[in-house]
Length: 326
View (tube, rainbow, N blue to C red):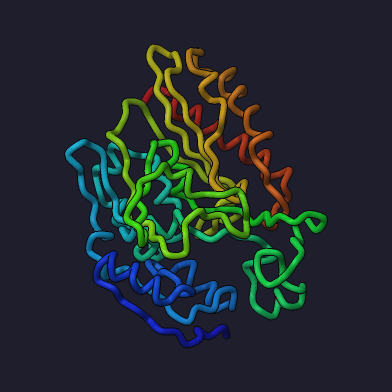
């Protein structure tokens, strides 16, 4: 049995209170749904002396429609709440489909948008019990000095496995970040680093407070996921696509992936396919863009070569689905 250690549970009512608690407790961890954090605490991967529960901050629990259009979604909005909101299901189907693919219904009742975007990276050698990790002399991501996935290098290759990030990326989403020096809004992709040991570019005293989605563009979007088991599992690979076509001619195309690298990635070069007639030839051209941009490693039970094939097939199938007549 893995027991929770003692820690102080702090419950701010405002973002400013949460920021103050972060300054006073620099090693504290933020708690929203806790579906990832609590497991890691039980396993001894993290040992916080304090946990800051942000669920009582009303501003983080709302979905609003700003005057300029689009949506502002608070970071503590649960995935179940995302799925229940018709504005999201009708205007941003990729996000809705990604949320529906996360774990099981009971997890989605507590798991949050912000938590999924800031999900810790995962690896076969990292997400284990304390005795398992100690028997392997730990790893580069936690207490060790060797990456067991790539022992000759000095980089951690733990994979990012959040489902929602690729959907937000292809939808052009930005994130609102609060910090001691005020707030800032940046494209989602700017908060990530392709480093399994430190994949977030957020300062220790910053908090991701909301996601902004622009007004829904014309076209279609969707999300598809491959995993070992049909329920609960993190993605071996996940793909989000947003596209627009007119008269069978591609006018816009964005593709983003999760599960293949240490951060979610927006595939470069898809603009070169704009102007082409949709069909199998375009689907194949899209698939050929992937190998040089993805980096699946032996961080899961499935070999990298298999995951490369899975990614290509996933993207092809989703592209075909979205370009078919609705």
